[in-house]
Image (cartoon, rainbow, N blue to C red; front, side, top):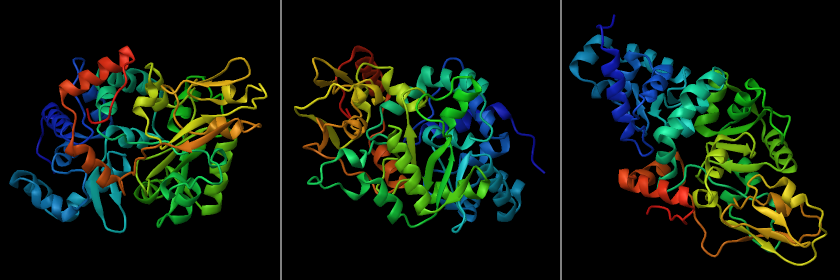
Length: 385
């Protein structure tokens, strides 16, 4: 059915195409990025993906964009659609069921997390980690807006402080217009495979997904649909366990992760550097008052190692603080509370708008190198620099 394609050429073309996306897919000296693409795409699907973007398109729109050689090979929109559906089942692209539209997603957050049913520790250690170290980590860290953000544990906020709807997980759950699904945490799954189980929770099914991601997860069997009440209970348990709540950086998020310092890949990336707070978006910061009981709970539960108790007084290393409110929620004396920062960030409405904003100020090589050098040296960063 298909003309014999050159696999290497197809993957090279796709790598270059993905690298033009708002969150790119940079080339490395080792070529490990091609091993990753071969895990997600066949040579045929790699060719088709080169005619897609991060905005959703119907199969007939993608078909119309194909050169005559490819459109002749597929013969019809229906035949192309079968391939696109197969790509969505493998987690290579995102599909909206109701509209029957398709879009590319970044490597992280996106293609990698969609491998929840197939991920192995070997693939993680030999492909994912080397790619992060060889280039993708800088690509991720140097975006003008972060892909994820931190929302505070609601128990850490004083009653008089109003919380914007996009910073309140219960409101996000209540107001979502689509389905909600829950799926296993891919980070903790890899940890279990490596016999390094999570120290913060025994749960594995705790990553909540909404909207397009929920549609995909339910359809492909990567997780299960849950009610709003189940979602609220899961969020409550995550707060009790002292996990950091990280939604995608949108008012109407696709995903909310419950992260810990021992397992989470993103937190591990941030905390590798002296100033992880430079790469974390949060509208809240810790306020310290008198009355510490020297119980040590704030220091014990801080996933970022940002709190130490000195002479019966909590000391916050703001360069490490994620603004999550875990320490304040655990403080029995209310010595620690969360307050809104003087300058707050309003996230984009949805994923497409987030990627649009990132794409407007896409990082070049110089900016990525500058971000990397500052990160290693512990020099304060600024977004979009």
